[in-house]
Each structure stands twice: as C-alpha cells, then as structure tokens.
Length: 286
Length: 286
Image (tube, rainbow over all chains, first blue to last red; front, side, top):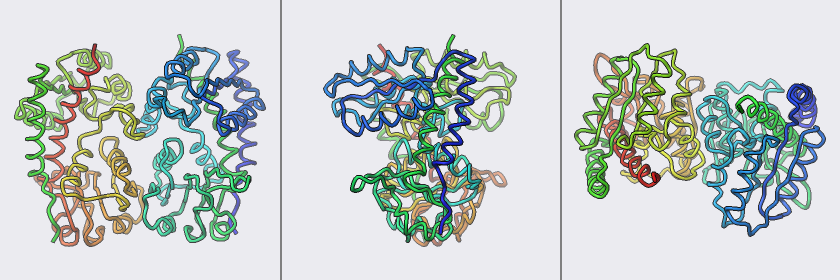
C-alpha cells in the first residue's frame, strides 16, 4: 500500500509558519495582506470557491473582499472595477474568477491586471517569467501546492520521468514548468494523447489535473511511483480526484488523497502568494 | 533511407511568398521592415551572426542596422540605446545579441524591450502569451522554422509522441509549446535526463536543440521517426548539427540535414517576424 502524502497535515504546518511571517509583516508595515475576488454573475461554483477562500483568509487573519458585478455587466464595468482594485493600496492580491461571461474579453481583462497583484499567476507576464525563470513572479497556487508536497516528503524529482496530465494555464502548464526547473524529464499529456496509460506507466511521478473522476487507474501506475492528484470532481455530492484512489494506492509508492491532499496546501499557497504580493507591492511603490 | 526535409528549398519558396507580402506592405505604407541588432563587444560569434542576418535582410530588401557598444559599456549605456531603438519608428524589430557581458543585467534589458519589436520572442510577455496562446505575440524564429518544415511536408503531430532535447528559452521551450498547441504529447529532455536514447526511441518526432555535435545517434531513433535538427556546431571548421546524420538517416523516416535544414527556414522566419512587427507597430501606433 502506498504511503499517504498528507496534504492536510502539511498545510497545517505551512500555515503556522506563514502566520508567523505574516504577523511580523503586519507589525512592521501596518498592512494586512488582503485579497480581492472579482467575478461577473453569481454562478454557484464561483460563490462556493469564494466562500472557501474567504474561510481560509479570515481564519488566517488576512483581509478578504468580494466584488460581484452582474452577469450582464459590460467589459468597461469590469475593467473599471479591476482598475480600482489595481490602484487600491489596501488590496494586495486580485483573483479574477473564471469562467467569465461569454461576451467578456478575458484576455484584455487579464492583461490589465497588475502583475504584482496577480496571485493566481494568470497574467502572461508572470507565466513567461516562470517559463524563463527570470526575475520576480507569481505562480498559481495549485502547482505550488503540488511542489510543496513533494518537497515536504523529500521526493527528489531530478532526472526522474514525470507525466503531467492536463495542460491548463493554471495547473498543467505551470506544474510541468516547475518540475522541469527541478530537472525532471517532463511529459505533458492531454485529451489527444494516445496510449495514456502506457505513457504514465513509464513515469516516476504522475500528476493528474484534468477534472475527470477516476481517470487514472491502477494500470497507469508503475509500482512505487508518486501520484499527485489535483482533480476536484463531485460525484454524488462527494469530492473525488482524478485518480481512482483505492486501486492506485495498491501499486503507487506515494499518493495524495482527495480530500486532504493537494487541496489544503493550495489554500495555504494562496495565502503565501498574497503575503508575497503585499511585500512586492510595498517594495516597489514609491 | 530517410526522406530529406529540404529546408533550403522550403526557405526559397517561403522567402518568395514573403517578398510578395512585404512588397505590398512597403507600397501601402512606405515602411521598409527593418531590424536593429544590438550587442556589447565584438566577439567573433556575434559578428558572424550579425553578418548572416545582414546578408539575409539585404537580399530581401529589408532594412538592417547594427549597434555595437563596447564590451565594457554600462547598463545605462545599453538601456539608453535600447530605449532609442524602441522609440525609433523606422526600427520594427530589435534583436539583442547574447551573450551579454557578465556585468550586464540581462533580465532588466530584455524586460525593457518593446514586446512588439521583440522579433526573437525573448521578452517574457511574449513567452507567456505563447504559453497561454493568448492574443498577439512573437515566437522565436528557430522553433517557428521547425514547425514550418513539419507543415510543409504535411507531417501531422496531433496525438504523436514528440521529444524535444534542450530547454532553452529561444528553442527548446517554445518548440515544446508549439508542438503542444498542435496536440502532440510532448516531452522535454535535457542534460539531467536519464536514458535519453530509450526516451527518444519512444518518440514519433525527435527535435534536437542542445548544441552537441552528434549527440543523437542511430539508437535514439524509432524506425520511421521524424528528426528535426536545430543544432549549430562547428567541427573542424565544418557546420554540423546535433544529429549524427549518416547513421540516423538509415533509420529515420524524415530528417533535416545540416546545413540546409532548419537554418535557412529560421532565416526566413526572422524576416517574417520583422514584417509582422512592422504591421503590429503600425496598427498600434496612434
């Protein structure tokens, strides 16, 4: 049976370390690290995500704001609100909730985000800086959480084969880059990949980030491999990952459960990014 | 024996198409697409690269400028020259030649480049836009040349296994992203990769971009695979690629020779990027 990569316990530890650092920052600067979530419309999935971020931020004593525009708001309405949040010195992180309504030009909105406040690493400048490992940048909290788990369990990826299933801008691609920067040999797989199971079976580390419950089965996993499950799926009202946990745990060497795996660590990474953003802003404002 | 992917013949064809388009642009706007190369010092490799770009641009009737600062110039000198080139409406593309002297902060210089004039796709904003396939951006001419060759020979990469050897910002990483966007299953390999030959042998497409003569040998190649050689190495004064051509050609299905493979197409792609930059600038200047 695989060893469990206990994200919940790790998150508690990382949160405590972060709180100490945040407390020192607040005392030194008088700034309470604060995130603003911006959305158009009140889709239940957006509200649920905002609630969970709110809980995490309030528990940590960080600032939290929600800005909801009507689903039929104009591009100009959203841009104006974003400009206001960019300019507000009490807002350090901004999270634009997606999906945005179809009539909204998402690219224009994301390019208008102050990269220093882009705590989800979605601005192309942050994506490019990560890709080139150049200067200071934000990385999306989900892949950061995956890496933090590998680090916490001293799993060295250097020279190892890693397969990342999924190529989204906020999980798959940045996770692949983070693994590459740590000298893994990285393969990005996706919906068009042929023989996915055989491909994954060659890997020492398999990361699943597609949003398909139970996609990764026992036959995907080389005995002893590390399995990182970023999936968030609801099946019959129950949260499950992309990995068929019970059968995969029989062959894997290490595995993140869902819930209690990458999720809680991701939450702490969003706090971490918001504290980093607050520092970055203070250091670069005149 | 492998079929030859004839980059020289393709480049001639693409150059002709480009000339027609450029001629129409020049007639319509009065602007001659012009590149400026900026360097610090007179290292022979930099001079040789500049000479080859000059030849290609003059032959095409495009504008060409060289700006050489002394090797001991200051960061401020280089920044001032770059700002001047950014502001010059007669300069459409800027190519900062690397390596820069050790005392120069390369990141600061590259971030100061007008992304619209970044015909080598080195600005992190262009890198990030490519990564996310968002909006308008420049991509380095070398990987564009590789893709143009695949396209010209109707080699469909969708669902195919591709291995890119090398992870540089101007070849390996953008090539991997371009292949990923075309739905290949892409692996990035590098100096820390273990069992490189076995990894490559799984691939339908092998791209070599490391700068080590003869690295890719016969045992790297699955019979019938496509081999794209981006290597530029001089051995006993002779230009050779990263692929041991003679032996690999016996097993590969398709292969680019060196010289006469990716090189000539890369040259045309730099012209193409400079014409694109000229259009982009005109469309976005008031």
